[in-house]
Length: 234
Image 1 (cartoon, rainbow, N blue to C red):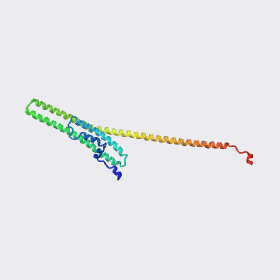
Image 2: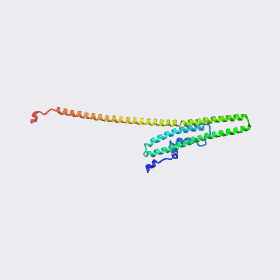
Image 3: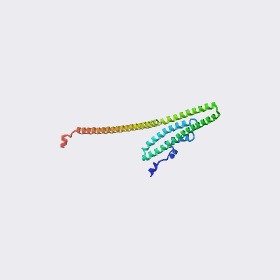
Image 4: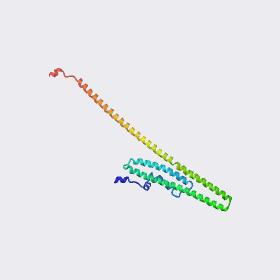
């Protein structure tokens, strides 16, 4: 039971409160771009850039967390927890992105309504100047809408490329780590082989010394003078 408690799933809210690196980027973006806060100059573009950067940060944090999971006891539970936290983070970023899109559309709707109102008022006045101004407003509105639509189309079209780049970077990082681990293993094997070679040479050296000592002892024993014959008879 104690082991299961250690590996219990952590809710996204708890993870964010505890500084979860997966949830933290989305939490920061949500804090900086809360709902109904996109009215300032450049806020929509800034929100989109922040969301894109946060997605990269979440992807890296998910990769690191999954690598760490494989070193733990309950790998499947850990990976499931990482997946839930990632889903929460991406969902939070998507909400910020949708908020920016809604604000942009609402602003476009207001522009259209204002243009219609001005056109109606100026039409009643019957002024040529009003007619020209209304046409200019309509042209400006159409230009802004076209630019906004083009920007959204380009942003959506680039999504697969962004995902491929992120996946390629993850693969390159995994390959670098695998190469490093292989190099470490090869160095360890070389050190072990060198140690075995050293011990073998030490053993052979001792054996040679013992053999030389034995041979010297034999030669010294053979060189000792035999006792005289008279002494032997006495």
